[in-house]
Every structure is written in C-alpha cells, then in structure tokens.
Length: 295
Image (cartoon, rainbow, N blue to C red; front, side, top):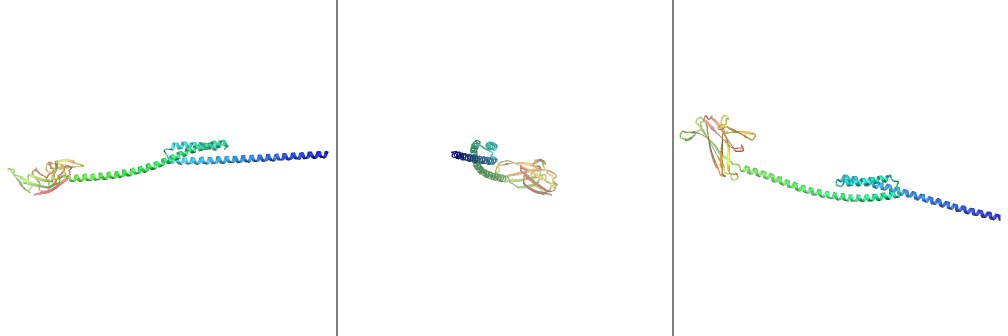
C-alpha cells in the first residue's frame, strides 16, 4: 500500500512538472513573439520616419528651384517651403511613434497637395510667359519693320526736299560787266580804258523756273579791282560763320518768268587790270561770276 501511494505521488509530481514546463515554454514563446513583433514595429516606424524625412528634403529642394525661377509666385512659394521646413524639423525631433507618424504623414500630404497646386500654377505662368515673349518678339519685329519703313520715308522725303530745293533755285545767267564813259548829254560810251571809265554797267539774266516760288529776290554783287579792293558800297554783313563784303544789292521781283537785271555802279579813278565780279543769293551762295579787264 505504501509503495502504491509513493508511486502515485511521484506520478503527480511528474505531471505537475511537465505542465509547469509546458507553461514556461509557452510564456517564453509568447514573450519572444511580442519582442519580435515590437522590434518589427519599431523598425517599420523608423523606416517610415526616414522615408518621410527624405521626401520632405526633396520637396524643399524643389521649392528652391521654383523660387529661383519665379518672381510672380515667390512669396507664396517661400511661405509653403517654410511649412515644409518646419514639418521636417518636427519629424526629425520626434521618436517616431505610430500616432506621431500618422499625424506627420497627414500634414505632409496636405502640404504636398498645396505644392502640387503651386507647381501647376507655376507651369501655367511659364507657358503664358513664353506666349507673351513670343508675342512681344513679333511686336518688336513689326515695330522694327515700321521704323525702317519710316526711316526710309524720311530719307526719301529729305532727298526729295533737297531735290526740290535744288530744282527751285533760280539760275543767274549771262553775267556781264561793261565800263562806260557818260557824256554831258547823258549818252554812255563803252570803253576799256580805266582812266576814261566813270561807271560800270552790270547785267545778268534770271532764268525762268516753274518750280520756284514767285516773289522778291535779293542778290549781292561784289566787284573786286585789280588791287584786291572791293569797290562800291563796301558794306559787310555776316554770312554764317564768315562775312560778306559787297559792292551793291539788287532786288528783283520774280514772277515765274525770265527777268533781265541791269544795274550801274558809279566810280572814278578805276585802276587798270583785271576785275572779278561775283553774285551771291540771299543764302550767300555764289550763283554767278565773271571777270573783265581795264587798261
């Protein structure tokens, strides 16, 4: 009986030990599983944190490019970039727990949506700028063509004006000078002797010109003796940067037809030699010249 009782107790003890061992093994397995799952969760959260940080850094860099390329949206781009920078700082400082990561991901997606809108707006502005630039280039081409056309017209007008001015000038022809001796009767006798001469008769013809306007014309007649002296009135007037000394002025009424001009210059003690005669118009341009001799 005692043997049977001892055996029964041993069997019960063995059974209890087996049960305890099984429970211990189960606990160890459960704890191991929990530890493994926790490590996987932590590893997963860490990976998510790193990935989010990388995405934020990439988006911040994209903002830098857009800000440098765009002035119209510069303030908006800088404001949104600052939000990205602040979110990156928060993610970097966080422990990476699940609740925080969910919050940061939500904030990131919202900011990314704002960024996508700005990117689309930026592309639209660039396209509009290209169109405007092309339109401006076309306008500039048209303006350049118009300017060249106007310049050509101005050149042609100036050339035409000069041609008309040149064509409208009156030609002074057949300039002649005769030395005469006037008798007491009033009769004038031509002479080539200096001592006998007491008058010089100057004549020239103003040719007809239908382009020229009618009206009074003034001509300055300059007579220079053989000694280089200007005879006659010897009046001097400014002629541009220089001056003109003349013997007399003759005023002619021009009526779009030829006009014969005859003038006389009285004098005495004419010097022998060659005389030079010049006729200038109102612009002091030499329009005719001749010479004659007295002996």
